[in-house]
Length: 331
Image (cartoon, helix red, strand yellow):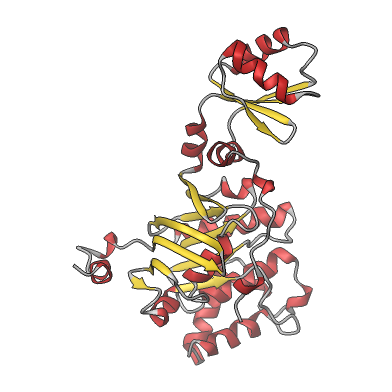
């Protein structure tokens, strides 16, 4: 049976995922930006793609948004194939890019009006949609404001209203909180949660752990591969126990001594050592007693999403600092 046809004839519409990615690969020359990435996003949730720069987030975002051609594998939005039905995919999508897309010299309403024209909206139906979207993002009283007079957080909400004007079922946001202060970032996420509650499926890319924690479900990308997939709490629980970070002037000899004396798995991260343990408090006591002159500092904490990343990749989140190549940009 043809796999693409099978995607389009589910037993019911509820069986169709909002987003489907299956064995996706993408190359820039010899560099592989995505490596056999597969996941699905159910309708009506917030799905996060967490990863450092160069991890593959933006490449995947642009493929789903039909801005990059699909090289290998399969992707679909609301049952429509990205490769063979790009126009149908675009009708289902609202897209908010990391770079601003507003005309700062126009009012909020004027920005939305010209966006509506691009989708063939006009007259009373357009005015009605504009009013609905501004209300949805809490900007009904700012429609006559010049965009350049708005704060960064309000501008981002205007961009989301623009993206929703044609009634898409899926909203894609690429690093939406870039440049926002903590208060504006919190306000943005309240808006996204309201949209989710209204039935809009949201996919957001981020490199911020605290943002990833707000997602209903999360995929973690590292060097083009999906290294973890699940609910944030579920992923953190998969680490198991506590996480110890040890600072030492001689980390390599200390790591070997800990392995021999305690039989523990010790990871070296830069000049620090990392240990996972189910009895962290007791282990802190025992390590300090055993190696008082070799341990400079020791920290104990519950597993975080960065601990998940370290466990799955063997290195820290920010060690992947190679940005995605310029050839990935859309024209």
